Length: 397
Image 1 (cartoon, rainbow, N blue to C red):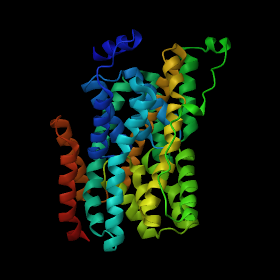
Image 2: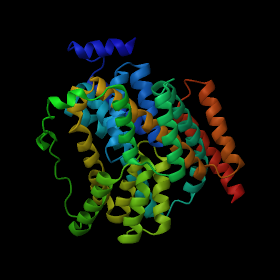
Image 3: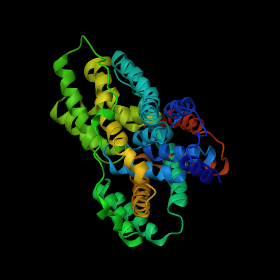
């Protein structure tokens, strides 16, 4: 009902059922308390913004998920930017994106300071031992909800969903062209593209993108330039969500530039996993270890600006043409593929996090608790899992 009412408001120019400030506060909260990586975060946005509050329609959410999956860069951050764009356009996208990323950025900078000052974070392994297992439970629940809502009982979408899940598990990566192929397949089968002959879409100008202020001074310009170029490539050319960027980062940070040792890099990934918000925020921790606060700032900006542009520049055309039957069919296909890949990634991540009986029990208990107690907050589960890790890990290692 909420979804239908919201769609009617959009079609008749009605005011959104929320203020821009409310959306910014929501993204701040999600960035501060949203554990579980991209799979869980996109699930939280659907649960909170579509189902619980009715701020965003199911169609707008699916458009945002499809666009985020098509474009390179971090999935959850791009979806958050698009959620801000739905009713408040460029200003909403900008503020929502900043609010979503800023809390976890500040956390990893603080951890970077502690790491360099106190010589490593040995306790992090124990915390991640428990948290990593609980995260599997959280993202499994999120993947289940997304599957039931978006795939439903449609046999074609189920076939695409299962194919992408299997491919993701086997290859341990997300293959971008399969998302596009899935969208094209559903489009051709359900809504043959007669309208394509009517003309091409108008070009979009980069002038729509907001200008970014110069933020840094007094730092090693050569190193900062290297950081900016490398992390801009990471943001612009790496497809997939969350951990998909890790192999690319390892190749540049450890192998090519020798900025970090193997142990430091593993610690950087662990920091991203035990902090809320997007997993890709590990770039802030890496940047801090390389060049302090200026390095962290440049690394984060260089990574997230491309994904911001890849979201807001195509967004007007997703909004303008998104209700056409061919586009709806295309989006349905990509969404089924995206959720299949997300489900497959749960299994891939589980292989690394479920390493023994205690971690399996933590994951299982997390699933049972979240299924039984619908209002249980994920940060409470994460805190309990971290405490369990601190108690159990030293006894086993």
